[in-house]
Image 1 (spheres, rainbow, N blue to C red):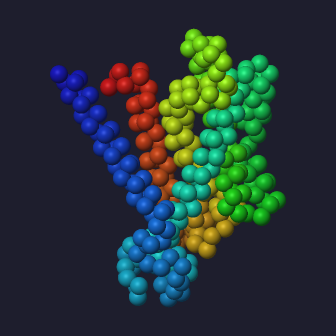
Image 2 (image 1 turned 120 degrees about the horizontal axis):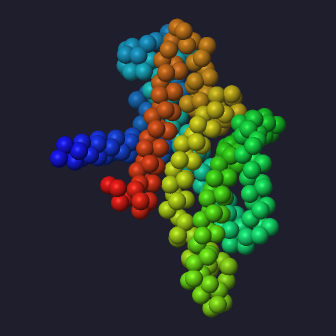
Image 3 (image 1 turned 90 degrees about the vertical axis):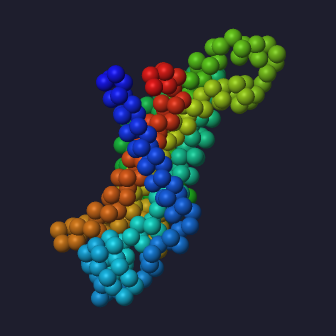
Length: 287
């Protein structure tokens, strides 16, 4: 009985954590859609009289709950406005990486042979090369733009999608019903889209969830070094970069943007873990 009680308590605790993560992600999704409309103040408005004020300072615009930056802008408003590039750019990058990686992985897994060997060879080369160095090189040579940042992040996220799709497709195409479809002269596109993709889709969705957290960290890292999305409002990574010069005198400039990145990635990973438990029959049987 005691063991069962502990198990129920642990289960309820995990459900509460997942619920909080979902609520946090929902709030950030609304911020990403509405932009700075939810910001308590004008994120672009500067006031040198209110520069570097600590959290809770009350100025002419109202209470700055998270303080102000070096030019007097409200930190909370900047974080709300910065949610859009962090989520939308990362989301589009993961979608592009999943589309390319899954398509290539399924086709290579279905064909096998040299196609599969070539895919594994290319992915091994990219895994052995430091991605951030590649991203900085590409964005540094070309002019930073939203499409370029999306492409670079997608370039760093497509490999897991391709490898998982490749291995899963090889297992699916060995089933007897796939051979029956071939006998009935089913085309490659029909086999992949109607029979292979539905079987591997749950694992792809779980992988996409974790890849989104990775993409957000990538976007923040590029913004931190000045090669991120070119916007008038600083992104979370750029806020960290701008606040590092004042870290000893104004800790809130880096603490709150860093906390936003941490909570966003943590919430995504928590939801990803829950989604994996739901889609995995072995995990579902343990619950």
